[in-house]
Image 1 (cartoon, rainbow over the protein chains, first blue to last red):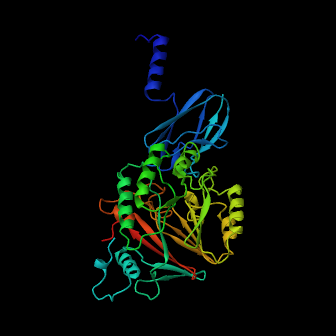
Image 2: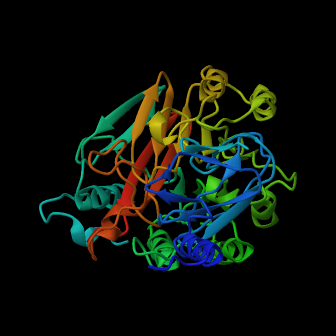
Image 3: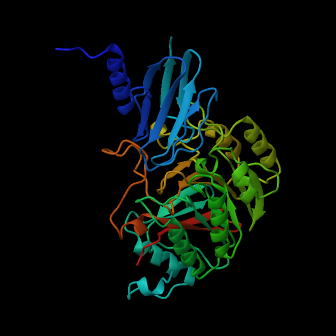
Amino acid sequence: MTLPPPIFFLLLVLASATAYGAEVPTVDITKFAFAPKEITIAPGTKVVWTNHDETPHTISESDKAFVSKAIDTDDRYEHVFASEGDFSYFCTLHPFMTGIVHVRK
Amino acid sequence: MSSTTRLPSSEPVLDPGRRRALGCLAAWSGAAVIWTVAGGVPRAQAAGATGAVVKPGTFSFVQISDTHIGFHKEANPDVAGSLRHAIAEVRALPRTPSLIVHTGDVSHLSKPEEFGQARELLSEFGVRVHTVPGEHDAIDDGLSGYLKYFDHDGKQRGWYSFDEGGVHFIGLSNVLNFKMGTMTALGDEQLAWLKRDLAGVSRSTPIVVLAHIPLWTVYAQWGWGTADAGQALALLRPFGSVTVLNGHIHQVLQKVEGNIALHTAMSLAYPLPTPGQAGIGEPGPVKVPAGELGKLLGTRELSVVRGKHELALVDTPLEHA
């Protein structure tokens, strides 16, 4: 049996990662909650929030370091976390909805 | 709205105000009461009780709430139609209300076209409409979008006051001070303004306060309350007749604190669950079978009897025949 060249193997991994969205962490907004509520990513990573509710929501960092516009049903919001830190966020329309993004090297 | 046809045939001839109020009550599917506030002591009276209804010549106005113009999902694909329905009902009242108050969430997404459409529709009432902002009117850019269409005193603020019909009306904004994990707040600047505003009002003047989110804690887990409402109510406590009108929760609830009566109103867009309703878990739009929606949306007429500090409320669903 012939093993595939390492480069081919690497391409396969990258292709599947992209296809299944593993490279872009996604937070689902469903039933007035963020899922997952807590995620850990590396610096430079983009996080995508998708709203599945019939109600608009927003993403606002607790100190307003980043604030989204209204995210209506099926709309997305993206933010790239450049530096390390813990970023708590909430929905300004429903402040009981909270989440946190840990950015670690 | 025509009331006479809904009155039982055995009903004696009544004055028009009473006939209509009884008609509204007869149409209620839920617990029908008229609230009167006399000398700061609220009483609930059932239909037919003497003295429960409004006499002709009193000052009356209508509260509407949560029109969410721009919403077009399954829970109500035609919110503009629901507002038009309400306008037709109000215009058909035997006694034209002196003004309309709208307790917030005029728009759904704070878009200029939503505010524009709302203002156009609201003008069809034919009488002045006073609004307070809801959190849906403060998305993206605070109140700057809302105030382009609904700045009632030209001061570019969400709060204001005015006098009409012997009543001191106060419009408040409790949709800007959202902090993570907590309920909303009025904020110190607005509370200081409220104190100054009330300083010029005699204690016997009936006061009507408009604010979108309830000024009492209906259900903290869903943010259905205002963290610093207690400070506002403390300022209002010395007055003999205080009525607080709220929206936000899309259903009728009442609370009485001393001589302060607080009332939430039905929406004109879609129903929400009851506070903490079992099996639901979140305050999202409730979908109901076609034909049921109009029974859960509605308007409220309020009447003030001058000199008596009485205030009567009648909640009427859009579908009440």
